[in-house]
Length: 144
Image (cartoon, rainbow, N blue to C red; front, side):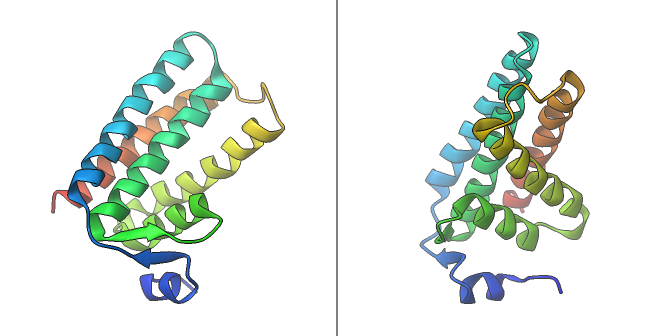
């Protein structure tokens, strides 16, 4: 069964707040900055951090969308809350990107908390490219 926004609110995964366009713009700017930093880490063969920072760009973009629409994560698992919100709110054609966002959430956790030096060059490149696509999808969603 596919979750919807009402489910996230009932489970207290997200909460409604006042929409904040200024914060949304600041968060998307952070996402774009992190994309550049991830690319810089790729250039110096720091693949673990390239992936972690690419994921962080996705997290900022997701939080940007939440602020834009008047929502905030309300659970202890705020990273997962942002992923679930994006999976619910983004159009169906972005579904694969939302799944990718969740996969990188798990992968980033592995890298930061246990599996150091486990990311290869191709995985790092793909994470940056997918993150870039995700940020673009979020920006397009907010421009509607």
